[in-house]
Length: 365
Ligand SMILES: [Zn+2]
Image 1 (tube, protein in one colour):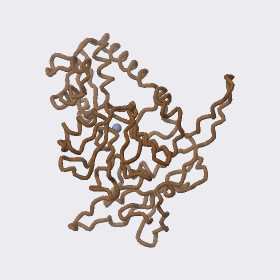
Image 2 (spheres, protein in one colour):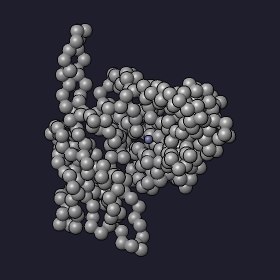
Image 3 (cartoon, protein in one colour):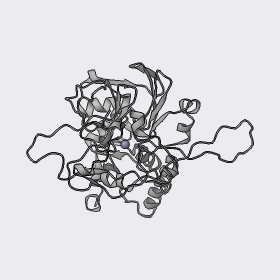
Image 4 (tube, protein in one colour):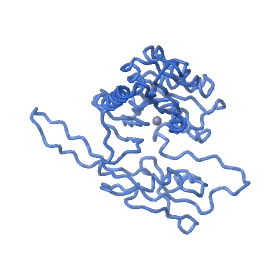
């Protein structure tokens, strides 16, 4: 089938904005696929073996979704962005190629004053061979979709979801479900909470949510289709040893991996979360020893960083001050060790949690 209207050759929605956006810059800068390596084959003997894993191959995305690669459209008023390199549809190993330059229509998609067309759902938000989409709420009713999965409650993933939602059931973790209901007032008849590590049969597909090690409620989604194929959609996640050792990922082959990452490059090497939290706590303690009146400020999105400020609160034995809207969200988690440390008086704590946008020196003085 041809690429649907409103999408560029790479399957990204064609933007009408004339200015460069983060997404434009990100896709133009490309991805270093050489950083992905296949795991070594398991060996029978117990002796050490050289890592014999080869490079992972980026398979043809168009092939996976059954989309026919479109002809080039330079003649039709399409300009090619800076960059380029190995194509996303290349079936041969891509060693250090870039994502192809994103293409934009000259002059924008919609004339000023004209009625705005709804965005088309990009192909990579659909799970092939299923009536499922993941994190696709900006596109109204997606053709062929009968179940809408939400990986976690961050705006760049739930964007478009409002109390007017009526396009189908939304599957997510129990904690995310509570936030969708509480913060967005989505009708609960559309919300389908799922337990982590429990297999559900949805539209004939076995679906299991795994802990994503990202924000509270975030899940990696494992799909096992009727024909035995398995797909893994990571959403936002932080890889860890325990994730790698999950029985579902240990015993099975993954046919298709949806890797949602900003950091697919070896230059980004993050320490384990526990080490980062330990470093933050020790730094806070050191400053307080030098200057006992130091105010410790943690900037956070509406959710995320809870484990960081909870650890500071426990180590320094101070309550956590934050505003009423975040207090409501944090209490909804049902984490008693967090709830009991939250206070509503900013004078009674030297640990304040603020929206990330407020963490500026002028505000914190
Ligand atoms: Zn996120």
